[in-house]
Image (cartoon, rainbow, N blue to C red; front, top):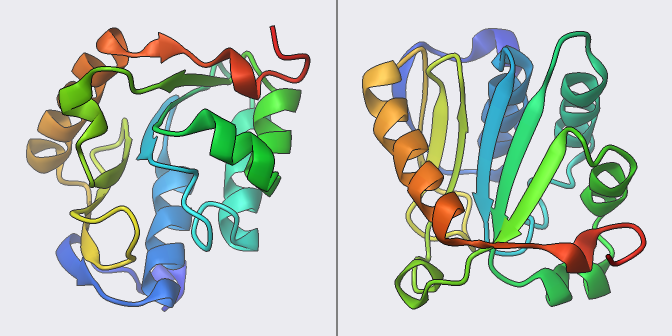
Amino acid sequence: MTAPDLPNGAVNIDSADQAVAFTTALIDRARRHLWIHSRQLDPGLLDAPPVLDALRRFATARHDKQATLLVHDATAIAQAGSPLLGLIQRLPTVFRVRQVSDPIDRALASACLVNDAGDYYFRLSGLRFDGEAGLSLPARSRPLQEGLQRIWERSRECTELRALGF
């Protein structure tokens, strides 16, 4: 499934190829803001070459861009050396990262990507690709974004992932 083949409306995602295609489209369609909630930067998804390329385009495009990332285990991310980590460290004014610290938030097993164009990709289990995604569905994406904002406010600054560690 390529980006032009993506349907409008909500669809079920059940394969890695679909997940990468939707994630790439979601990032490409973001105007100025992207929210990502991921336990450990979703190996196999956020480090897929098309997704990394889309994130790089988003981060280096004109206009003020902001990618807000909520992670659960910054130490594991730093040790794994995700390709996305290099991009986060090179562009710290675009990629803001916080680690979930509230015990209730830490218990969340889900993962989510949302942009400011009304697109979303929600996975009940952040360890799997299957989930629900939709393009141009602000009625579904807005509550997800608002939930991520509340988690963001309760989370702590993630200094472990900065290039110099401070």
